[in-house]
Amino acid sequence: MKKFIGCMMLLGICLLSGCSGKKEQVVFYLSSEDFRIEHFQNRVNEQFPDYQIIFNYLPTGNLAAKLAAEGAKTECDIIGELDTAYLEGLLDNLADLSSYDDSVFLDSLVPAHHKYLPMTKSSGCIFYSEEFLAARNLPVPASYDDLLKPEYKGLISMPNPKSSSTGFFFLRNLINTRGEDAAFAYFDKLSENILQFTSSGSGPVNALVQGEAGIGLGMTFQVVTTINQGVPLNILFFEEGSPYSVYGLALIKGKETRKAVQDVFEFFLTKVVYEDKDLFMPEQIFKVQPNTIPNYPQNVLAADMTGIENLAEKQRVLEKWKY
Image 1 (tube, rainbow, N blue to C red):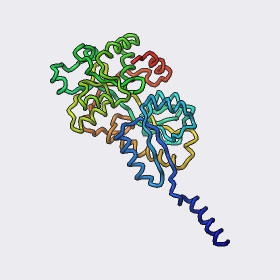
Image 2: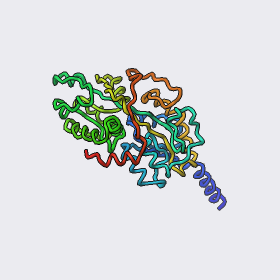
Image 3: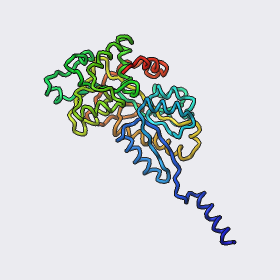
Image 4: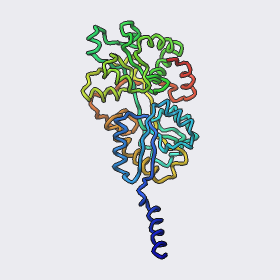
């Protein structure tokens, strides 16, 4: 009996100390690209071998809708790279991050409520395959209006604003520069030349890489990454400038008390986000942040993005999008 009691005590101690082999789980929901998620996964696995850290990808719009539906009961612990307009709509379910050092960030990017912190700034560009256009004796477009020419029918790829923040910042910029009615009239005409409104921001880059389209509207960093992988693409900025969005990092309220979540969030914020700027997303969010990525455009005019973080306005505008 003494031996039995002793074994049971040892078993209890073993279970309490983690001898069962079951690792504590930390779950990210995020909208980053697969190659960046692979880097994130490798880094946190190296740093925290005793935790099971799971990254679940969803396109931006889908991620926001899922978090809104699940509320604080979601399995998600950490939100990564969600459009700040959507984060503004989730504030009731986000933890207070005022205990974290936000002095390293550009002051304009830190919200007064401290419910999220900047993770990335993503800009847009027009890009094209010179080989694709030359094979069809087509000129390189010089303006948004050029994209409406009938010779580009079925040759342009753009992300859908309803599911992609990349698509939305192109729409928002033209609303700001042309007026809402004129902007929607423009996209009605452009739709005739669109091969596909893709569900994610990476869709147009893939379409050009696969030779399905010759012109794309997409994220600058994705195009640069593809160019640096040896794919011959070219980048354009029209006179309106480069549209952009800011994406944030947040914690679900109630999850910030778990040590595993605290550990992973702190490491991700102070190490991995910096690495992401060095390797993939160089546009400035930190006060001190060099850009050393080859072929990345410098000194580009920023587009007028007034209203980009107003969630109610975004939802109202997207109600009118029919593609």
